[in-house]
Image (cartoon, rainbow, N blue to C red; front, side, top):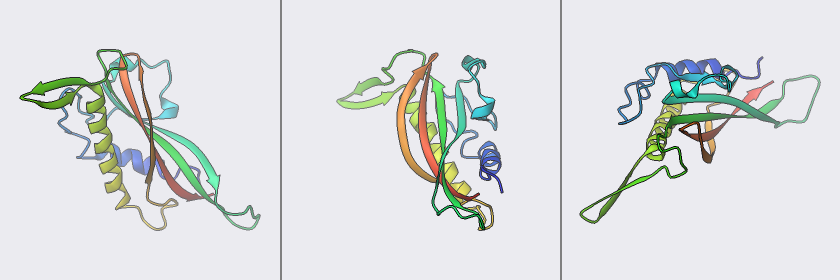
Amino acid sequence: MNRVPYLEPLVNFLKASTTLNNHGIPGVIDLAGQNIYVFAEWTQHKDARNYSALLIIQPGEGDNQTENRPDCLNEFDLEFIVRTQVSNKRKTQQHFQENVQAGVTSYEGAYMDAARLEDLVRQTIVQFNAQVLPNAGYTPVVLKGLQDEFSEDGYLVLKQVYTTKIMF
């Protein structure tokens, strides 16, 4: 058994996804099966300016769902974070650019681009769940919540928190 049985299948599924590759979001480069990292590979020493679109998977905390018993495996609720990063050329917290045409308001900008990419990631994870086998060592991945966005080094980052159950 391992602590992150979902990780390799999920990363490989995201890299091969036709939903994420050739996504067509204006102003956001295509992931093209690249720029998907596990947090341990991503360090502050990497230059984020080389990645105008990026997904980072960060394994998180796990809560034991069963009483500790020495004679069997325990079920854990395990969290992980998927970070979606897009270029934010304005380098401010104002991620929206308002456009009013004939009294109709629309918005463009880094937040809208990141939200579209984040939605495609969510759709891809739903597709991933459809192929999770009962004996995979983990349950289908569930979106638990959304965390506040933040700007860093000219990029806007949105974070989604997912959970899965594992036996460990």
